[in-house]
Length: 219
Image 1 (cartoon, helix red, strand yellow):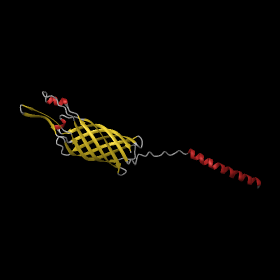
Image 2 (tube, rainbow, N blue to C red):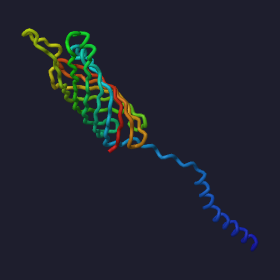
Image 3 (cartoon, rainbow, N blue to C red):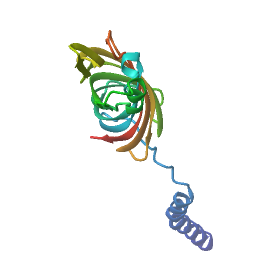
Image 4 (cartoon, rainbow, N blue to C red):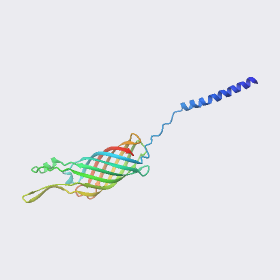
């Protein structure tokens, strides 16, 4: 009996001393689950972008002005998991086409006058994969655009000759865009976008298409 009791006590002690070690070893052997990469809840973001914009209509504008650089910024806030609302300002410089003017008016000194388009707008985006590192979107916007305007004319023998005349004007502008964000971290992303802006009843400029890229920062 004494021997049996001693064996039982020895086995119990061995089990008690083994269990914590066995549990620890089991925990160590279990693979650690990776933490999810959180790209959601980007409540407020700042975007900085630059690109190239080209006038599409009308001939009175496209004949003498070509594509040019554009730059701008935007601030966005999250409305829902997929939707974001923002405010943006963008400026585009349309370069004067010297060669086109010289070809049409070979005997007239070239008066090159670049034009600036300033666009102030509100926009909304629908993100299709808001929680992913690569997040494409479709957007739309409304705002106002102002073209600086330019003119060239001279008086020959008492007769006024106009070579081009683009008055400055402000028009309601509607935009449509498609693009994507690619997040490197939770706070930093790069962005690419194609956008079309329509100037409602613009007398000399109706549609502008732009290609742009930039960075996006969580604030």
